[in-house]
Length: 505
Image (tube, rainbow, N blue to C red):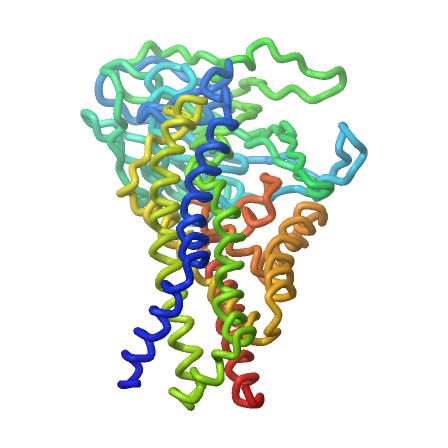
């Protein structure tokens, strides 16, 4: 053979000369497309129709609930407040699931949109989802400036007591912090999307619900436990065209107004004033709201079927030469067996990647409209495009995952030289961790996904890792998932190369 290029051509001729291999390779793409469409037609959600669904000023789902002491102000305004204290509610690390008696573990979300907060805010009225800007002390993240459920600017990491100042000049809102009320440092400035000439300004308290999760037995259970925080405010100074009267109340999510408080449970809203010192009790969360489901992943349900077909081709591509005795001829033409293995891996991997990419792209384009029709549509779900970076990443990594599994199966075929055994083993190595991972409790499924081929399923996710879904691969990120599969494939190829060198054929 004339070099490695000739070896590549020879392996390509072998691959395309067997009709059933080509049919199966194209069948992998067809299966990916067909089952993706079938899965999309069977998936539905009514999240956009729920009564407590809130949309922010940019048309995205948000959470917006807190206790608010406020008054209307027209035009430019400056509000200065000392947050003297902030007492968040302590939550246990574990709770008993009221629905089944199992233990639920607390989810500690590091997002700056969570935990308890006390600060000052200017807002387009006192309705949930309205445009706003706020500077506050967060019990877990110190001083922050946030606006319109999107913008987050970190101030100094400090706790109460802390003086805060919010200044509106035209459409721009500037925030400041001070440790003594004399020396001020600017936190930042924002321009809220819809701040009218007359806006509500005041001080507030929020406390994010604590999420608890229980995993195992093929599913996951998530519960939100209402929490409250108590803060005190004094040294209040307000300048601008004001009415001079503070109003007290709570901004609530739709559907929460009539919610009953259980007997003996602490109140989640409270206001008192004595000598210019306000004590405010608040509950609720202010920030972006993730609805959980991933429509990009839901449009690629056919990937697992495509993988099964590629595993079969990968194994047969290796074992057929042993069964027919052609392997002696191959090694006689190219004695360097490592080069033969490399050529096989490149030809099979490249072909599988191209056809897998066709399958996932077509599957996405066909399934996504069906998902939109079934409720996976704005505002709860963004109307993403195939050219969006996150969608491109999902499609490319999913195709790479499928191609790597085909090469891994080929390496297993070289090692075992038995078609049925190699196909069965490879499928078990992929499927079994998925099943076990959905049964294991706690965070054990994460370890399983980091150490098995099933972790590659994370390549289909467009959202960050989460513990709230039943799928165990949702616990890890896509790059970790593809990294695990690449490592397995590299090790399998290394073992196959070692075996080829030790064997006669």
